Image 1 (tube, chains in turn orange, yellow):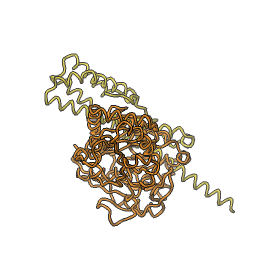
Image 2 (cartoon, chains in turn yellow, green; image 1 turned 90 degrees about the horizontal axis):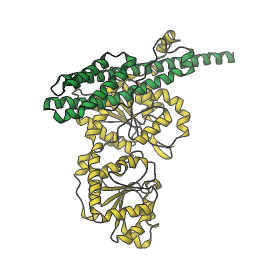
Image 3 (spheres, chains in turn brown, purple; image 1 turned 90 degrees about the vertical axis):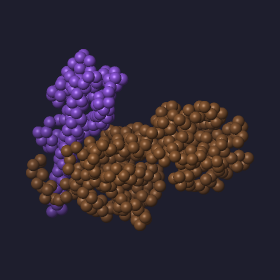
Image 4 (cartoon, helix red, strand yellow; image 1 turned 60 degrees about the vertical axis):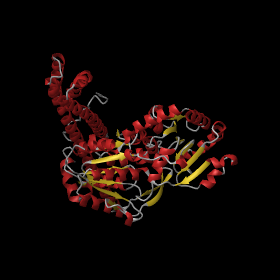
Length: 395
Length: 167
């Protein structure tokens, strides 16, 4: 980055640090990237296990599991958490705060309420209109408008934000460490006529059942096809839905480590993402493209945007297993087309490299900081005397 | 006695709300000022680069004249006319850039790279400014802000027209 000045940056993570999730991974990568650039970074987050945190992470307490937006969210709020947030802001002496998901009832919202100064907010979630957010919109609005700049991780997330809170955002995608993914080595056990799938396959929206429904048709044309499913979950239960004769075609690998995942993506013939919805960004597609896998994905908005309407991977109508089967057969028979899509995808994935993404984020930081002198506690949370003084001037 | 207490409480809450709203509006005005200062700075830098390009060997007399004129108009325009003038400069630069890139020498090439980096930043800055102006205008429409004249004598922020000005 061009600016020689190093900054003190405070990042707030709304979800439990130990729980796996896209937001946490994004914050971890961003924080580590900024640290390698010479900035000093502190991440405030809920954490269940406070002993095994990286040195740049500060725990605000144990997360509370609450049902939110159709899933269980591990968040943190309440008077004690609020006091910790204020203390962290006061002691951190930050030049800038970067708040993730400030519209969710967790630490980021508290930090946005408590602080004043240059603040950047990143919105990750994409969802349909929610009545709850509408109801608290008027309360949220004055808080959210304190942000000097808003970032959305995808067009989907931006539209969600515009619909709920009547404000706009700049789209900057999530980042991946592209070099790590291009460095993957193909493993024999995963190569050949293989279809790869990564994700928590027990969730219906990940769409594994659609891929398995397509399997009988595919085996008719390509007998030596294999489906490799990676991700946490109970495979035994899932396999019972599959035709007994085809069960040996499906292998459940369990959860893969980061290195295994990279090798896995470099090995498979096709990476299949049959998700039926609920994806805001689809970082896994960026990772698959970066490792040089040819991608087949459903036509949900996040994926079509990611694959450039089909320029960087094949797209089938979401939920249509027959169309998926046809597409798999055609691609497995056409080596040239597959290699072409894989190369186009790998080239496209450079857009998501941290070198590019962090530069864009940093330029937003710079703009948010113009003419401001750092983050301090907001006046509302400071004292009553100030309130009475101001009344005289304005009322 | 009880009702008197309630009235006091209500008045107190109302005063708190007024103070809260005034702070909120003050903060929004501040945001508009900073986002404008940021955008203005970037646009000034762009005009300076345009002038430098106009004086370089790259530009033929006609494009040099066009650029110089557009850059000066952009610099001297009053705030309400600013977005129009800047659009003029954008389109002048857009016309010349492709040709210039084909014949640029290293020194001039760095100027062109700086220009294209600046263009990306300007787009972000415009988005930020438009957003802050819009939220301020929306808030100032609200009844409580009008009745109690919480905006004081601060002028209503001017919208910047070319949201989709692409180079």
